[in-house]
Image (cartoon, rainbow, N blue to C red; front, top):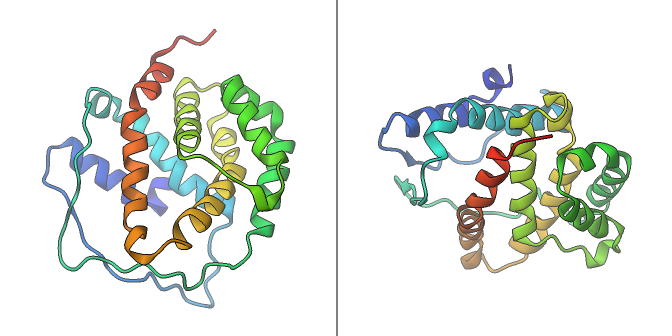
Length: 213
């Protein structure tokens, strides 16, 4: 299972569900041996998002009744963000997003609502220089994927893999909307994402509990 490779989400969710006091601590940059071969992007999505969707499914009684998000206490010094290692060009990433949306259209149509699917396709058809993925659409799309995973609208492994092109779009969004900002504003980006997620939680619950035909 992916949970064995990436247990972080499972551990955090179990701790929160048990009512334990949780905090975060910056451990510094994660170093990887140059000789080690990392997971492919598909495997990385399986290990992270697939793991998280599984946690949502198995712990739904814990999270679906909560209405307010709470900040996590930071223990020790705050972390520093750096643009080191971030590719200056997202051309290949955008091509992955565009080709994936085109090739996976029938699968995405079964996962996403018509409106969301239409917006994603429209973004994929725009010029790379004009790429823009609104935060609201980012959260809404992830929620629709999560709800479709819950309803098992298709093989769950295939559903998680269909997130690959959308994850590529999220990577471009992060680079353009976060790393180009002043360092003092970088710290606000996760907070904005958290607010979007919290405000739109009723939409997730609506999709999660809706009966599928």
